[in-house]
Image (cartoon, rainbow, N blue to C red; front, side):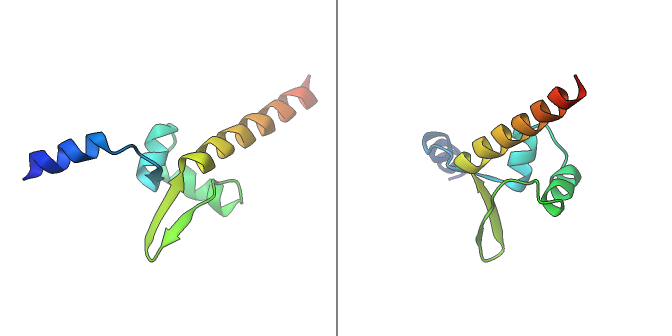
Length: 78
């Protein structure tokens, strides 16, 4: 039974991350995620009752925003 569930999970494309999955994919700690979120710098979240997920689109948008912010800081320093 468990083997069937694993096989199905491999066949279904991922459309959203859980917070731990997002953190692992973006190489940040969960505590850093919550610091960013509390500062208004986290990705958009989807909530279904107690389940929080981050869509692939929101993750892509978040990366672009963080890259733009980092570049803006770099340009001001130079």
